[in-house]
Length: 451
Image (tube, rainbow, N blue to C red; front, side, top):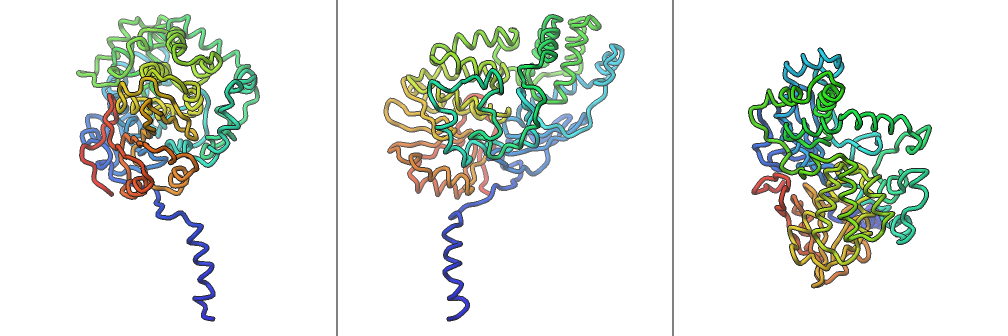
């Protein structure tokens, strides 16, 4: 028997075990992903190529004050919108004032690569992986670990932190391990004391007023911007600088504010976080009956007041007849800003596409993704991603039992699908709706070029 014939069974076995027609996530020209006008401007430039990781594009921005990374097209647009504020806050007049106020440590620009996808609730080691976790193999454990209705929130939240954030939880397949704490999060009196001192001193109010004047989100994750906002707010609230002087300094260097303020709800700019949370609790109670689950989302989720308010308003506006609790459980699994925005933008996709047809429908958990079933029987899966490649993980996810069983199923994508993804999903019976332009959608190129 020839060598080739003896090897044939092994070759066939290898081919059978390999993912058919799978592809790797690409590195693409940035100009193929985002509107060219955002790639360069006063005070910044974006590197020419972007790596797609976890179905979101990663961009690097170069500025006179340091380098930034943006974990998606949406985050890139936000960072570009914050450039006038950075120019104003890093002006010589602001630097001199901070030095005179005894805040020398933040008077000089930070020259370091800064990861903009921060983690408001807990520190996570390593770089975020886009939204890759939402398609992980551990989703099969979801029913046992997170969707036990009536037993979702147990005393682990009071004593060990949220079960939705556990390193070995169902969505943690690609999350790097977190360092162990000597004491649990709830035994941190210094942290709470610091928060109360800031609040009583008027720090929060001053920070929101300065952010509003600059046209940025007061809860921005931009590390270069956060540092200067904090410094000016501390100076104003401690009496070292009058609030009017701080406001004048903050806007003195910007001739025109082109920031993110239009996407920030007015109440987030004017109300304390505690008041925003109370307002959101009242709204959320209209569609979600589970009090403990509402509390877990509002108090322990990875959502700033800005994102939390957006999610609540969108959820209430959809008027679902059921499934809100399952959706909140999905929302609680977000472990980074990019993942939190993924959840919020899922609602934006549904709201834009379904409009009034969403009323009376039901959220249907599909693994860790929030699908929606309309009264008319349309099964809608929103994927707010920049570029959906037909990776082995995506192929495996869409081939899971039950995912493709619905007769009328629609896939919404805010960005692009690779040509192979389009072919494979169409063969599997999905109606594809790419480039969904909901209000506030990321500024993708108008006519994308296939790689």
